[in-house]
Length: 210
Image (cartoon, rainbow, N blue to C red; front, side, top):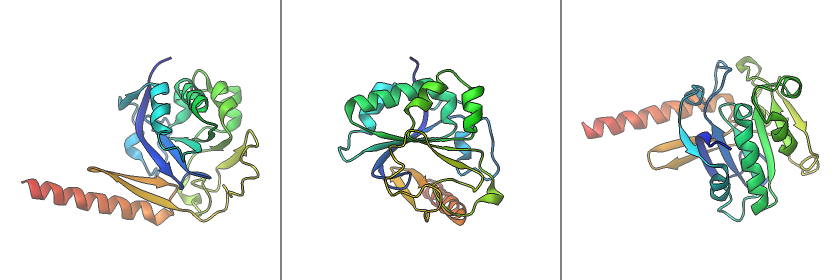
């Protein structure tokens, strides 16, 4: 199985699903949704190359992690590698899986956009599907806009008490060296505030070196 093309990872967050989770954002997305919070992860270009088994060990290094979340980018375009990743993770620990996709579930089942989509869907506990539409961003739930749907594919998280559709949103800002990540599905205004703050810090850093 080939390596994953990974835009970013984070170990340990409560902003992208129930419990304490690790997140994989893949590089590359075909949709180019207006207002995307991660436009730098849209181009289908090489980023970090990661072998699924090694990445599973990295993501579960914290023993408190009880779930993974796949986002991006578009996870279904790398379904084969992500299927291998979640299977490797579950050999280490019983781990739930939340996955985002711009593709509707019906399309994924009838006309999969890449190999092994069916295999990945078999592993997913909760799928959040549909394109992000900025004018329908109501600031609620783990979905980005109200047209997106939450599918309890396995039932494992159906009774966990986490409201995927209507809960108040939370987000985390994680700093790793010179890199900053906005983790979660933030309230609409937070993305622009975060981007402005990052740009200001970068300009200050450039100014300090010159």
